Image 1 (tube, one colour):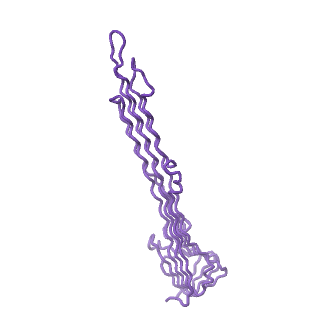
Image 2 (image 1 turned 120 degrees about the vertical axis):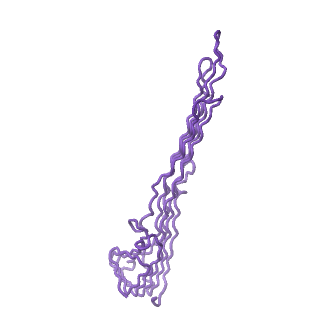
Image 3 (image 1 turned 45 degrees about the vertical axis):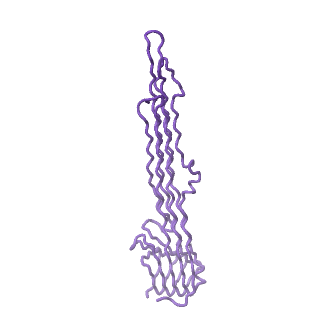
Length: 308
């Protein structure tokens, strides 16, 4: 079997690395990166070596996507989209046809933002090695932390409430002699519709699970001193919520003149604004975070012989 030397950043794309001697030079990094042959596949890397020699400050990690950076050190992409805004409420046109004009309809809530992309689960690593030679007891770091989730998308804005209809005009009975009579008071203006609620933020993407690491060696004490990172990735942050929609304007009272007086109370009421996300859920920045990934597992076994 040949030897294999890890120099600088060395990417490895196959599922099995079987060698006579596996040598890690100082500051080197062996990167499991199967995306070169099988994009986004979740892989197991199996290392079989009679001897592993570690100079100092070496690392084994993984990169299962084609994006810049290694997966344990970078998060999944953030969702940068903005959800659609809610439609505005209907504003009845013209004048009312009765003593009470029509109300504006309520605005629609903004759409929910898109969920963030989940982080990649770390793969499984198996190492079968006879002897381990190292100058520094903790000179090898195995970073199989789950990838952090991406942030969620932005929620849509709530629609504006519809404006209330203007009241019907007054009616006056005019006389040739004497005073005129108000036979119909000006109509009441319609009330404005409620604004649409803010669109919910997109939930953050879930963190990836930490890796499964199994070490089979004749030197378990030395392997126990390695630095293992198998934490789950952090859940992504929620996106921003949308803005609440404003309430519609109350319709004005109908036209008033002559003996038909104008009355302030006949003006329609303005509609309420929609609810902001803080009104809906004051803890939304916590409640809409992605779920953290699960911690991985580490086992070290005493080995009596190497597999073929």
